[in-house]
Image 1: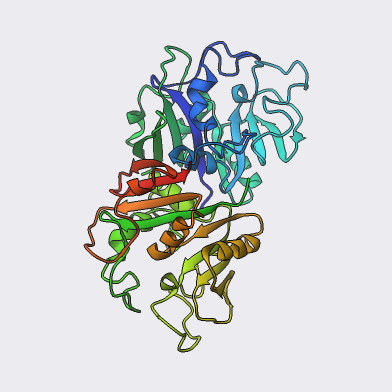
Image 2 (image 1 turned 60 degrees about the horizontal axis):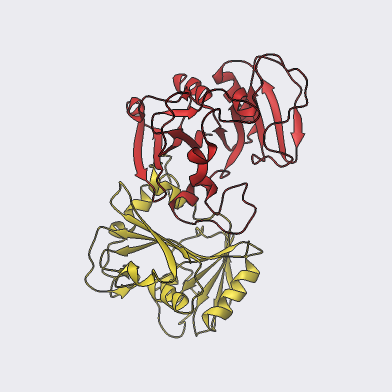
Length: 214
Length: 214
């Protein structure tokens, strides 16, 4: 089996936004409430940031449990990595995730502005330019035969979709409207010409959208 | 997290039977058509016995993909292992699965009739008597901190349910009626007093039933 490029557990609002407006250090998702978008994932037993032994083990848990399955690298946009724009003022910002990022693989952060790689626990962040196909090539090499996760945000996923590089995509549509922000799509139906699509409502209220290449 | 005992990808008919009548060498599921019970799993990309690179990557694939996740041992009933009953006539029968069984862990086969352990590829079969709690204890030790799969058949699952040893259970109800055979349940509702239950219809026609302890 070849190495897939996979979007996993990516949450959007019912009106198609994957992030709100006005991202800042205090508001990683801008005006969007992270709990409204990702509360379904946080409720599961397999949520990577869970600190107590509880959590649900129904449908949603299959998705959070699958997050690290056969993944050897992640590609993320710079806005997922942090709220800074333009040249790096310094190299103090190490991401939102503290000393134990949930990735456990090399992570390739897309940016036009060079910065040295650094390592936190078993996650190493690299900062790369270039077009999506080149970055994917680099990530595949680092993934050592495993699949590559495309971590978002919405703009980054759009770029890789537009370049026809995405093999499978799981988008959880949350029961919230944002009105504005960074859009993933107008409608999931836009992608039906290139992908199989299964639409699976979860008892939690989100609707899982599962795409794989035709 | 403690070591869970999990039923995974166990298929039953709409009328509650997990196996047909008159199991034999030629008919591992008795009069039940394995394709009717398990065709949903065989269609997925992650089906362990798949020999070509195709297959679906929708909802059902999350279940087959999860089959080996954090599993360190399996417990199965003797009727899952083979069609023989009573004392072993000889030790020639090595299971239905050929030289590469899909388990890749120690497997504990429940039987009152002793037989030496044997290994095929990275699966070792042990033959054990004793009550469910003792067998589970033995399997947990062999699982080296990981979870234990309860592989079936229906009679074995009932025994472990009756002993209140099952932590999570995924049962796929297939769109077929068997009329007779070995029963798992009259209705999934029987278990609601002890388990949370999510009922998730799949586009393939099976209905996934996801149980976890209250």
